[in-house]
Length: 385
Image 1 (spheres, rainbow, N blue to C red):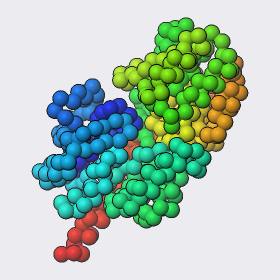
Image 2 (image 1 turned 180 degrees about the vertical axis):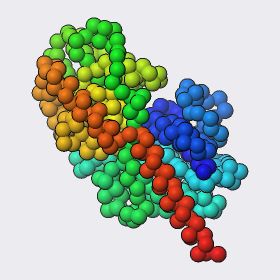
Image 3 (image 1 turned 135 degrees about the horizontal axis):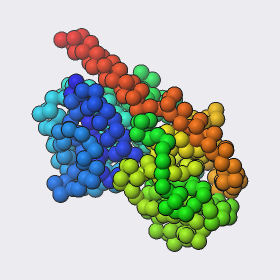
Image 4 (image 1 turned 90 degrees about the vertical axis):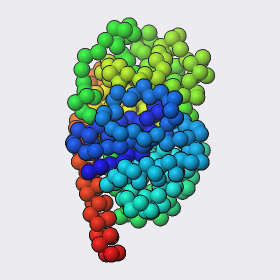
């Protein structure tokens, strides 16, 4: 089977990680993969070596960020011609929040190619604040167009129910949770504590942006007065990083590591951490959370998106998106003073990923979805002849 994957290679974000992991796994299972992505000729792709042997097709753009992409005026023509020449069996679009997303069903229908999408935008169970309200508008905007895709992959039943309320038929929606490579992301040795001179390490990995609510974590850390033997490590960058770094630093035991492209280094940081914290206001299904769980780290996360579902029934601690800072002020000292608690929760987190969120199971479900869509296409074509 030949799969044309339309996604992102830069700048680094969850969509990039998703595309890399899934396409490499498909290649390992013997599929042919062509990777179509927004790029200019002078683009630098630091992750190129991790993408396997794929044919790459660049699509011109005017602007791209971690959140959205603005294609050039000729991008749809370039994409159409590329798909006509590639002749894939199926197109899988890991949607990049681009105007091109709305044109894809028309392009693929013209070429008679089945079209699958993965819809990544974060969401909240309830519209509790401005950020979650804005994300709900994104879902309202996309819903009429997603209904024209052959299948739309989402990460949880909550997300499926939201899209169904917006008019997408249940038959078009497929719940396939994110998966993590449990062999690569696994408990192991780390020199992180020696490097930091710390007895206890708490970590956040992700964008430093409003929707991630990192400031609530930092406020809680400061007020909890965790002491010099505990460190809070922030891995990632974003628009709020400079302002927060000027307020929270070494004096409070906060270590800013910035964006780390080296995957092995990120794994080493997780292996050396005692607690992973995700204070987001909105989420989809966080790959960073699953990676931490798979490394055997005790996890605290808000019930934004599907993250609360991931940690339910004792696999971690679920925070309410209201009063995040207040909850963390109570919990941080508890996890600092009781290492046996973090050890127990780390084991439960690891087991939860093994039971429900492996990359292997994710790819098997994706294979079955591809087969269903192709069979549906064949039946439709035979009935229209």
